Amino acid sequence: MEPTIFVKLAGGLVYLLFGGDLLVRGSVALARRFHVPPVVIALTVVAFGTSLPELVVVIQATMSGYPGLVLGNVVGSNVANVLLVAGAAAAVYPLTHGEHSVRRDSVFMILASLLLVFLSWNHVLERWEGLVLLAGLVAVNALSAREATRAYRASELKAPMEWVLGLPTKPRTILFFIVAGAIGLPLGADLVVDASVEIATALGVSETVVGLSILAIGTSLPELATTVMAAVQKRTEVALGTVVGSNMFNILAIMGAAATIAPNPIDVPGGFFGLDFPVMIASAIVLSAFIWLRRPVGRVAGIAFLVAYAAYIAVLFMRNQVAAY
Image (cartoon, rainbow, N blue to C red; front, side, top):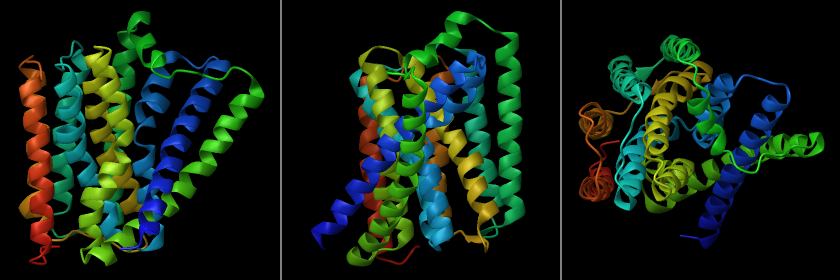
């Protein structure tokens, strides 16, 4: 395999990470400059910022005619968020939560996962099914906004802002952040999609397998960085909230958008029902069980998550040998 492929992949991920970071910071700074309420910022730009790489990659893959990368990236990212991201953070410091919203959103995460499996039962995702997922996103956001408005407490709403460090203040700098981010994201997505297809060809595996593994890990780096940083600073409610919120957004928004804009229905290979969907749902249920039982995800559980993720990746590549995808 040519080393240039990995250089292209690494370069694309750098563009994605820095482009998404700059766009989020610039957008938050612009919103604050125009006195947008903190609750609106928290529920939109900051909440969805870590999922921007998945969004632009999925849109690029959809428009470029690589549907295997689309579903693989979404499902693979959700598995990686729980087993890899939450596992790594818990190995650093036990994850706990203290907010009712995390418990509520964990239920939405499971329901969204089940909805995706139900809509995929006939092995295709059509445009109307994408619209159903987007409608679910609107409903969840409306409920969250209503609850946040009723339970407005400045101390809680300040927390998401603290994690957007280095906000620009000058109009020119804000504009630069937004423009640079808007340019970097699609450029990075183009490089990542091209490199992923080349890797799949070189390794003799399907695009779906690359989407479930290499691409999913790469686009989950923002969540990994955020949650590990939160664990180091013992802000574990941020860590769990990031994972749960990102997984919900990946299914409802990213998969919904992909199925809606795709020129043809997105195929759902049979291998997803035998391995990937069950792992995605099981990991979501296990994480939610910790949340609902108010039990911390300790270091032992975190290490177990990491071992389970390594096993999942190993099985993924072994199943490729028997053409499951």
